[in-house]
Image (tube, rainbow, N blue to C red; front, side):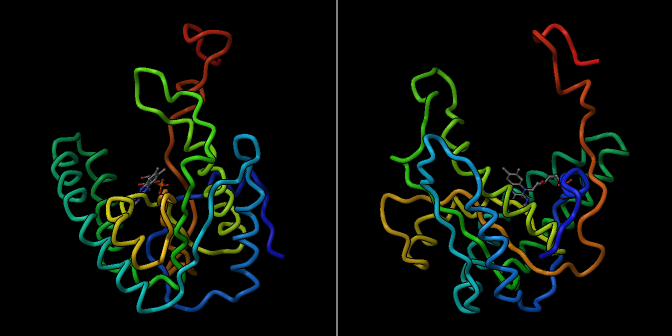
Length: 219
Ligand SMILES: Cc1cc2nc3c(=O)[nH]c(=O)nc-3n(C[C@H](O)[C@H](O)[C@H](O)COP(=O)(O)O)c2cc1C
């Protein structure tokens, strides 16, 4: 089994959107899917499932759907990045190029992992608050992150994507997802065309974390 230091894996788990079409051996696919199953969920209800789509016809259709829903997002990001200072604009434009590539080639990844969830099995403790509810996702996305980390360990490129949720009715029909299951993420996975995972750009811990109260940044 492939292995990599956990901190090394987390700090190099960037979005890898350029993938080779070479198939993923079944034992490797099984390991990354199993890693997803190890994730925690509210009350251990495990109200998520994942469909690893390998069939070229279904992948092609998912690719068409992804391209359609991605187009307006890519346009709006392009417009937003154009107004940023030079250094940020250059980074943003790189992401756009990578996003555009994915939109054109989504269906060519050797496997598309479609994460589904059952709305009744999520422990949504913030449902009654007067703000957007996020807690339900906490019973799904740890599984997604486990899969991404396992891909990193196996040398597989991957990207967490959510745009395809916009085409959920079509995806449901194509993949025979029963009601009331919904879709939460679509992860294209495959061996990278180039270097694959590598350096990431994130805010410093001092900016993100506090101690004891919001008024005391971690130092
Ligand atoms: C919740 C979530 C949704 C995302 N959805 C998409 C998506 O639909 N398409 C895409 O190309 N990337 C998507 N991404 C990837 C982000 O764009 C990427 O993680 C971010 O820009 C940081 O890039 P890096 O990991 O390469 O540093 C998503 C990431 C997250 C966490």
